[in-house]
Length: 307
Image (cartoon, rainbow, N blue to C red):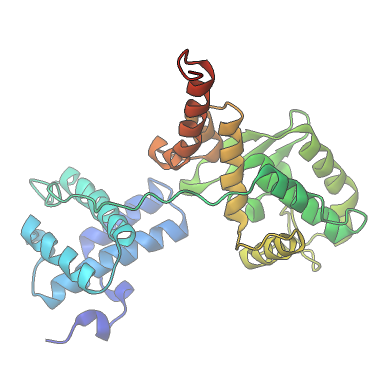
């Protein structure tokens, strides 16, 4: 039998249960379009496999799921992608049990694949300083770039959060940014006085010169909001000008923000809140900083360290 996911696109596979779950994620959970597409693709992949094997979703068993995961591995999916698939399936199964579609969760015995512990790429404080000193603030574009770079580092923003920010998301009276993050969740982030000063000057004197056609905070020459690709190109340009040879991205500034906060004494819970992580486990990639700090303190204060 030909594999159905070669005959149809994954998003062409549907089932009333899956449709109801996706509707729940959209309306009741408020998931973003990108997140919803990810869930739809993962569940569509499962439906394609079930159709190919002549299995029914209502009769799904743990054995069938093991066969499905074997199928995914055979297609070349790595541990991180498999873990994402499992997360999508678990969410659906939990909802299905709540709706009484299953008496028991068919995925309860599935275990996550072990993921490689990859440390985040971040910039040193000296590298950050070199990049932040580059934009020519005497020009409108240079001033805009300066403020964007300052905010990426001062607030640990995702690139989507930066380009989606509106003018009214900034409160100059208290120096706070309202950030619309993943999962349609808002968070408030304080920014330091240097970033506030540049942002205030940009909004008062520079931004009006772009003749805004949209209310996004950062605009291109046409007065419209910037794209992800536009910000990536700017980061690459300034990194090269600063003599940084390795490849960096807007997310590198976010990692640098978190790393430098922890190096300065902030705790993981605080960094979790500032980054907008729903789960502390997402913030624990920065525990290398905590470990290094503990080693330093231990060597400094333990009575036998100097012996």
